[in-house]
Image (cartoon, rainbow, N blue to C red; front, side):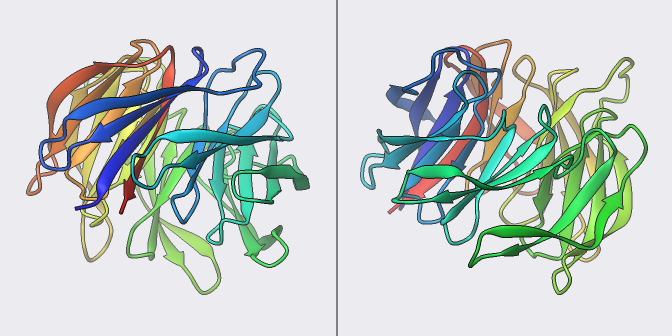
Length: 327
């Protein structure tokens, strides 16, 4: 079996926790705690991305200076070794590599821009070679999901036709995920706490809205603040975190239509900005920005319901979780 490692970004303590995941029981064991070098003033979150070959972890900082730190992943132990820091063009809330691992793409809602950085030697992020102002993917401020084509050779983004699809006013679209089948996309509204389902046309890269469903507990009243969104590898269950209620909402996914049916909400860590699901689809790991902790859950394979396994102490303000299988 592949060894599985979990990487948790802790913004205020400016470090990454490395944990080993037992694929049979879901138990976690601390492997390493690594500081993010070169940061004079930590920021509010630490967005992370794993290279396609699983050899490098990129960690973004939103403090001073704003950098992308590259860490080499030891292929046998899962430990991290710092390689280099590269400059970011703004405070990026989300980063991801392209499929080739040659470019790092990022989105900034404080700066209202999307950026593309070339990656030189593995782990070494170069200065941004493209900055698209007044845009976000998705766009929290004007309730749009922008659509681009990406040139894998040059690393440049070009607005698609049409350039965007609208969602409900004041939804505040935040995170999105593709269904593993590739034909559907789900978008989480930060400001209204709803999930928006879309059919996805891979040929032209466009979206068509099909459903809207709430991720809020039935008795909720107040101002929603949803955060993260993930789907199981088999595409059967979708989960969303809601910071305002410190809950995780679950949904069953219809295999034919992609339509969502609510499973229910469970309490989790305080202010759960980030969580993730392992590649087997059996375990969900959620961190709380205000609890400085991580909770692990077993995913029922028949119903998708979450059963809490254990709590673990993390650093200060844990907010991002990446899970990597190594040979």
